[in-house]
Structures are given as C-alpha cells and as structure tokens.
Image (cartoon, rainbow, N blue to C red; front, side, top):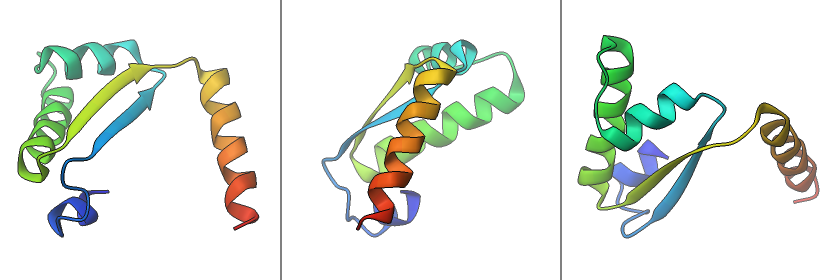
Length: 80
C-alpha cells in the first residue's frame, strides 16, 4: 500500500485497516499514544494519509471475524 501511495496510485483513496487490538484502534483514532512504539505506528500511518492525500479508517474487528475474512480473501485470490 505504501509503495502505491508514494507512486500516487491511490490518491483520493479511502481505506479500512482492521485490527483485533482495541488499544491500536484507540491510539490511531486519537492520533497519539504514550507508548513510543504505538506512537511511531500512529505517526507513520498519519503521515501516509497526508502524503498520499488518502483517508484511513482503523476499525476493531474480532479475531474470529478477521480469520474468516482472511480465509475468504485467500480463497478468492486463488481463483484469480
């Protein structure tokens, strides 16, 4: 994704980042965290949004649902 953003292939793109970690979701949506590691992640994602003129949404999704989505994606990709 970052490569495509830097090459301006995703300009005016709106994407969804799914996580099973509520702390990550909250940090992203607040825009900061007291954890250096988490703050660096949030900062990197926010910079990507600004540089690529895109909108990213971070959403919490249960681990079971992520596994189902990932499994469906893998099956769909195999048929391409």
